[in-house]
Amino acid sequence: MSFPATVLRVLVASPSDVPDARDAVEGALHSWNRLHATTRNVVLLPWRWETNSVPLLGGHSQEIINTQGVDGADIVVALFDSRLGSPTPDAVSGTVEEIERAVNSGKPVHLFFSRAPLPHDVDTAQLEGLRNFKNEIKERGLLGEFDDIRQLENQVWAAVEHDLVKIDLSVVGVRHEPLGVRFRVESKSERHEKEIDKRGKIK
Image (cartoon, rainbow, N blue to C red):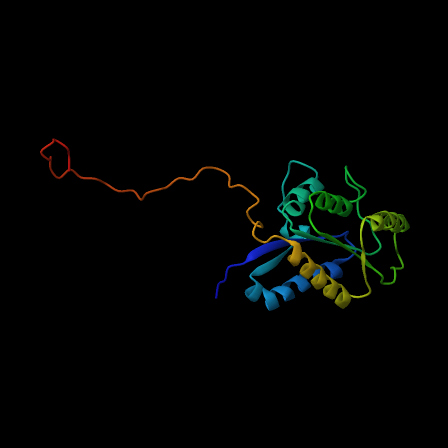
């Protein structure tokens, strides 16, 4: 049975080395929906570039992801393990650029760092860049850490509940003005002359 709901888009941002953690965040959002969507009239919609972005020419790939994913998000969940990510023209990595863009737009951003053992083939340059970023960003807020997927799922639930208290749901979904013009189309019809009235008009 259908029900009215406010849809909140949750961007899952991360480098490429945390696929299981990305899946866990999406799974946590779907679990939240199953339990709470119908009673609280809120749906959490995950957005991931690999499944939700639309292939498009006309700019750097990160710029397109920013426009399609970051700008349309209401909440951002960012994940890190041992990599910072690939650099972009404007930032040390695509994930960092997404985080900064979201923060500058006033969106709630939640950063989680894995404490799992490092892989044996860890990229030392990437790891150093990640540690430098973590040292810088921790001065700007509270960071989250997780040892396993289950712990991450619980923290994502807590983050979402925190945001729902603060987000004004009455304005979500009405931020974009409709484009174009409205017009009415009538079905094609034919008119046949029947007679002429006293004033000389066709009936």
